[in-house]
Amino acid sequence: MAETLIIFDFDKTIIDCDSDNWVIDELAFTDLFDSMVTTMPWNSLMDRMMQEIHSRGKTTADIAEALERMPLDPHVVSAVRSAHALGCDMRVVSDANVFFIEAVLKRHGIFECFTEVNTNPSFVDEAGRLRISPFHDSNDSSHGCPFCPPNMCKSQIVERIRDGVGVHGKMKVIYLGDGNGDYCPSLKLGEGDFLMPRKNFPLWDLIRSDPNLLKAEVHEWSDGEDMERILLQLVNRTAFFGNGMAAPQLLSVDCKTETKPASSGDDLPKALPVPL
Ligand SMILES: [Mg+2]
Ligand SMILES: [Zn+2]
Image (tube, rainbow, N blue to C red; front, side, top):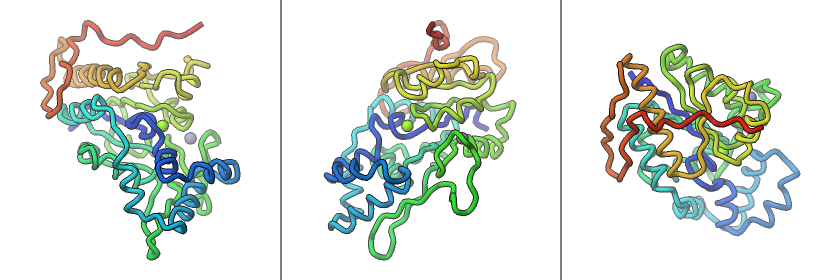
């Protein structure tokens, strides 16, 4: 059984940009999007934008091509492949949508590394229009969390994952994210878990506003190179503690792309310095 559960946000975490904005910009719908951004919830707006894109003659193939042009930091690809090779159970929890995320992960050959992708559902209707639905149907029953947008509370997804893999008290969780929606699940992480907030992004600001609310150990990162190095160090730590081994060991990393050797433990990242 995997000893480490790694939960990745998608936008501005796995990818450097926001996939919704990327598609809108690539298909030249930015002005229309900006004119409507305050009129409805983001998730509803994206479904509406797919309608606009469809009605102006753009196909789902055009959307897929736009997504395939999106760059992915080779360090992030390498980090994901290495963590997978080391036996980690990896999940995506994202407020993007299935179509966008699968297109990008498959394009870069790392889709198979993830056990599941938890995100807003999408499908192509009979007319060929991409539809994007809320993860939690607010017409049915709201998720009830006051901190999160109506379509998704990531805490509830993370709790379900933890319950499903029997993670409580055994597996360690490493959570990577950047946005406001990642704060709610971050607060639910326990002692022995790790939070990797992206430095100078909203999640990082929220954590700094009251670090005492966090039980997890916090390790900030700025770019893909940081993410790869710190994530693999934490994976080594969790595997090492999970095995009850006496001393940190180098874990072999079997992956196709170039990867830095895992840490010997001497240069483990320090917990996020709490700013004054
Ligand atoms: Mg994000
Ligand atoms: Zn929530």
